[in-house]
Image (cartoon, rainbow, N blue to C red; front, side):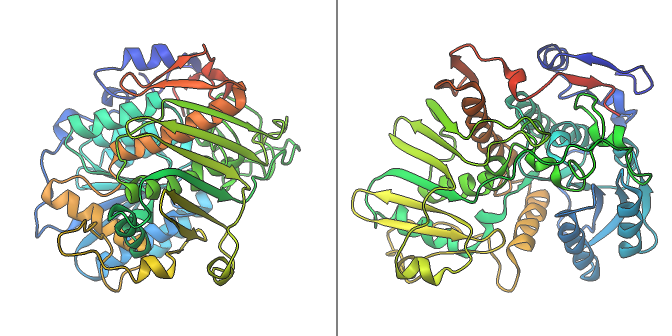
Length: 453
């Protein structure tokens, strides 16, 4: 692709088909030469040089992790990239000199000294930037959800594998002690066979502002849109961080918090790699504002071999009783229902907590001992970052590897697609496609825009 060409559109199907060998777009379009590719893991004693693409929102915590590693003599921060100039300058000032700044992520990827990048851009950029980073020889930490579409996720997995890169997705729940406690409790048979898992979560905001305006001078609106279809700027509707409430770019809480919750659910019951055979959903009428997601929505996923059911219920029912009362302020969570008992995993967005019976449980010596990523004295976000660094050094897959994260993103995608279409969807996990009925994917994702910025 030629970054200087005029804007045009290219259908998702044709785009993915044309780039099957090169990933999602191809390194030639970046101007990144093949000799920049690096093979294998980072050396055990090497200082890792980091670059940051997107430096607002959650990226501020990630940038803090990098600064902490630099202070410990384990990493350097070479560059930051951002299309909002106020955020870019704030990040540069926080990192200090020397730190290169870019408004075009492709230029950051051309820097030969950068080993790894942290991507914290809006969701619709994740797939393309991750693929390009892998093709440029960089390891990747990318915020969740990994992608907006199954095609984008497949391209990410392919790019990570073909370029031997460690790609960690920012669903930190797996790195925490409470998740491990519940996982040990379940996998050692304390609640019996799990037949049903229910999630509750607060409603989405919907509708949103409608006032069109000129983009602020500090924001490159065209670059923010990137692969999204061109549209006018609406004040307070998109940036910063409000893209979450667009079906196309954010997908609502099921694609934000849902990825966190689905990740811990599959970890707790040992179901990584399993995908549903059917999905159905219903909810409030879809609003016609910029924020086009329903306030309330319920999604039912059904799985086979083993058979179980996963329910996303927004807002759902918060469990009652002494334990639930103790968990004051917990805004979402999960109940695992077994044929002998049930167990709850509470969450508030930053910290999860297991109930007393799971906290106190000790697996027998010959029982299942679920590994714990959490390291003593580190917060869950830093644990997840450390896990990624270890994967870079030893060539292993990180705890929330892109292959697992791709499946979690598919769950969210299917939930939204079932809601928008009003149909019960079948899913072929091997082919990664809807088996029926015939659904138009443009209901929640429009054609990609060339040349994207």
